[in-house]
Image (cartoon, rainbow, N blue to C red; front, side, top):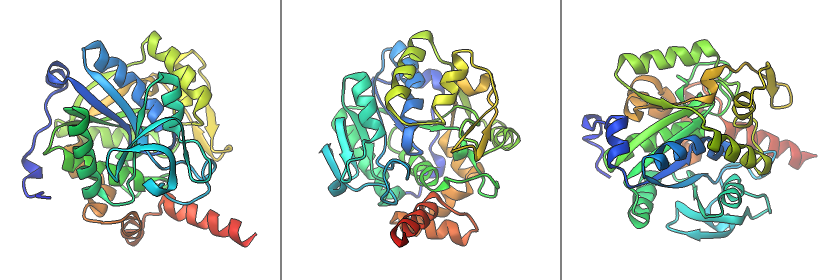
Length: 325
């Protein structure tokens, strides 16, 4: 893959993308229930006549799927492969252990297939797989949605718990920018409890100073109804809280069994669209760190060397503890 000219590629303005895109792939880039956060963007795009295919990563949280890391193709059931990296998912798709993918829940809610992306192969191969899938699906736009905003972490934030998936996907989106129109969206400002408001605002200020803010979109009534249906069948805390706020439930809360305090405000119901090129180059040290990695394990080790603990580290430790018991 030729990456020599990536820094010269510009992301089009949001209005231009909305005007010119015919079909979009929308991916929750953090794993777990991030696919729920794609629904407001699907509403925006479909309002402008763009067809959408929703999806996310084949990496469920440890409480759902006890095997550490994302599932590979041979570890999934009831999926239809587009290629080794990207698969079509239906309402019956599960891990080999029987855990239902969040995207299977979304397929049930929408009444149509969704996508699963395996990031175990590293950013470059993920980019290749998405490019191939986009060509086969006839898509001309890729939107990566992060719920909570931890994808904007610089790497040193003390609350950062799941930087690995975001880093790999941010690097992949950066590479994808030379292939097709690409956006990154941040939904649920602070709803995952990883970055503080001040830390998120710091990252957004860097993005804004580098002309990386592209626009925003809220939750329509129609989308809120759909999101309420989705969170009833998809286990997700970070996506559920903005839905509750949009319904008028204004309260400080906590997630992850009380370990993470979450304070939402109206920003948590808005998706902020940013240039993934600016996020990669100016904000995400984790994405820069994993850029050339060929496997997820290598990417996790590189982040460890940089002093950053990853969700794969946490899952491996939990798995080892369970095995010892």
